[in-house]
Length: 193
Image (cartoon, rainbow, N blue to C red; front, side, top):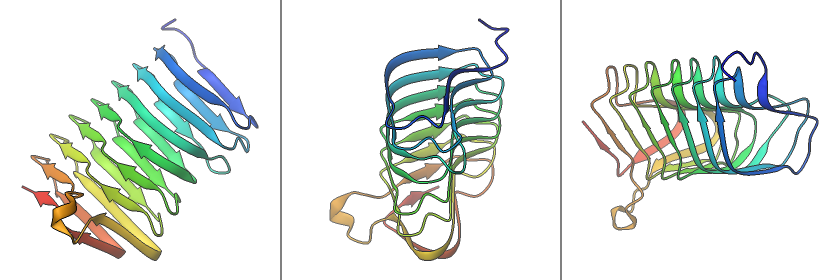
């Protein structure tokens, strides 16, 4: 219901939850995971039209796998994760307010084969992910930056230096920078224009 001022799925200290094949539309959040919820697995979710975020995992909670998500037309973030996530893959985020995909403190994550486009802010943001891999993503037509990667300890790899593996990211036609990186980040084999 469009007047819902709450998450449609509220996971508070909920462990080992699997969410699959759901269409979550027009609330405050599609999914809110908080309060120490661990090992969320979400696949084939449609998260659209929310007043805040499509999917939000707050600090102190984590996810093992986020795959085949579609997050569109949310007022803040399409997908927001502040904590560990094993894999974010095969997902799309578009026409969101602040950023399509935002991951922070997600050490060792694999961010693979996602698309983020037509967002009013940044396409993809990966902060302090340690030895993470950001590969085979496409980020385009965002008003802000295409791909932002800031890191401290460990090396976040964006693309791959072996071009034959075809693990590079495609970042193009964004309003600000294509790829913006700072700290311990290796960038190789990407296409940016």
